[in-house]
Image 1 (tube, helix red, strand yellow):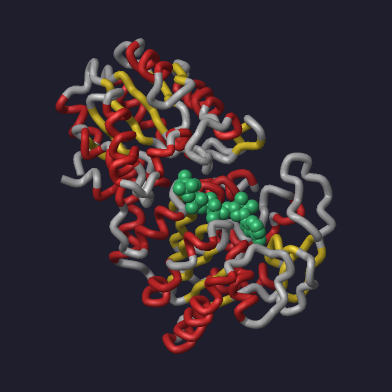
Image 2 (tube, rainbow, N blue to C red; image 1 turned 180 degrees about the horizontal axis):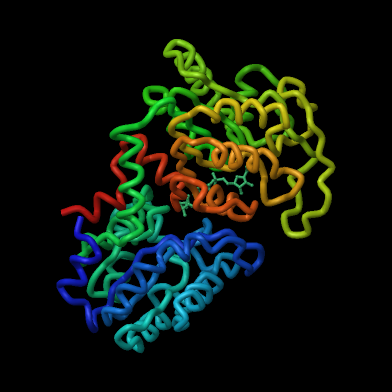
Length: 403
Ligand SMILES: Nc1ncnc2c1ncn2[C@@H]1O[C@H](COP(=O)(O)OP(=O)(O)OP(=O)(O)O)[C@@H](O)[C@H]1O
Ligand SMILES: O=C(O)[C@H](O)COP(=O)(O)O
């Protein structure tokens, strides 16, 4: 992969450089609750601007349905990037339309523009090569050079991640270089015991990584929304908790293989439940109750690990030489369900092993809960992306940058 410094050495002054970032930040309305992913791409944008490039920053945000949706506008992220750069940024209210073309045409050397959410266009995420390609062609008209630096999205075979770099001279940004450098350590030369903590809400996306981890990890700790498919598979009531019912045979097989291979597979022994998903805007009291994991009342929703689980997980992480953690242990955005996530973060801070925290919300969680970023070995901007990297999968957004 060409590095950004090699690209700069070739000269970018006056060139339009398209930076595919991952500005998929957590929002409460239009307020950014954690700007970590914006700060993570800032050095690449600054380097390019300082070298006189006309920088066009693009990203997805959330999962809109291929059409404009104000709830998923990138405007707040663009404004924050402008503040961080100290120069402001121009903002195009569409992605490849009149506003984008005019905004990019008006850029002068060293200035930065952000275009609207890539996923407002069906072509971005289309499974049809031709549809994706057609959208990539439109994006390519906005730029002379492509820089891939949205590590959090490199596992997506999307137009801006995979098809666009094939159409333009390309390089990898500094964030991608750093992320890949750290994750390589976990695949090439992992120090043992190696513990992996998995949680979060993208259960169907992430269950598959366990197949690979059973060959690599010494301990696998499950929490968050992922736990309930396992508890259900063991025959327990899970009420209205997040559940991937069709994956029950798969997770039963994981449990069987873990036993056969001597991989310690740890599930919650108690959970915090509530009658409904909490209101994250008002943070109104959610009426939580702690119950044993094998005695969840029907009609209740599991929203966090319980205190006994927190102690158990801390003990399993205390002597780990390496820990990879993706996915919050509960709905940490609400104070009634933040303890499980806090407990895992604290266990990593207390342990002397090397810890990697990966994922948009996981990384946001440790910062929002007040932990010092430097207390962790590495905070990755990629959740699904880092898991798929660890699985050894070919990541479309990295493959597209190689040549
Ligand atoms: N028991 C649960 N039920 C429902 N949602 C949960 C539960 N536990 C955690 N979550 C939610 O999971 C979300 C984060 O999950 P996700 O899988 O997106 O992790 P991530 O760190 O953002 O990774 P990625 O970068 O791949 O998105 C949080 O918003 C949190 O509220
Ligand atoms: O948050 C993430 O993991 C990345 O921004 C990718 O988002 P996606 O899972 O919606 O593709």
